[in-house]
Amino acid sequence: MTKLGLVLRELHRAERALAVDLDTLAHRHAADHEVRHVAQDLARWSREHLVRISDAASALGVDLDPEPRTTARTGSAQEKISDLLGRRPEPGMLLLVDLRRLHQTTAGVSIDWVVLGQSAQALKNHDLLAMVSDCHPDTLRQLRWSNHMIKILAPQIVAG
Image 1 (cartoon, rainbow, N blue to C red):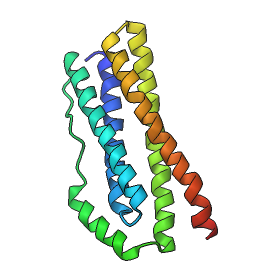
Image 2 (image 1 turned 90 degrees about the vertical axis):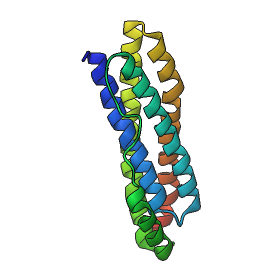
Image 3 (image 1 turned 135 degrees about the vertical axis):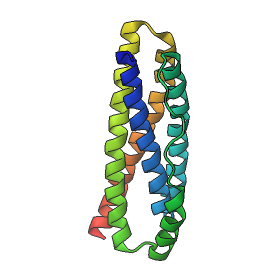
Image 4 (image 1 turned 180 degrees about the vertical axis):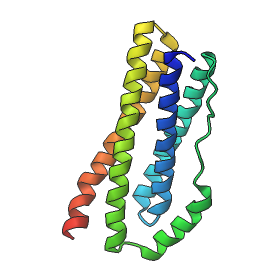
């Protein structure tokens, strides 16, 4: 495996973790409809990225699974708990903790896209550059969303 293959493998691992974290967030906080629906949309972007990363890795002889690990087994249980707890203060603090973790994961994915982009540029790999140009802006939007939600919710939850 080449060094570029290792970069793709790490990006794939991080993007997969992000998809799972977003799916978990959507299920765990299903009572908050904005969080649920936006997190589901953002998770879809990460799943699309996984397919593109897997295809790019395959061209280099690296086999990566294009499917994220599923949270379906715990999803419905998390949704039921979310519905029962509703807007109590405890779920609010849990939401802040989950958003903080999500933000950290997303920041790591963004850095991995930067590493891949810089490597592709140095190697003059136009296919990888095109993929980075398409996918990294999605990750930056995911990062801005988690940051925005923390800024909006922290004062309401902590001071409320």
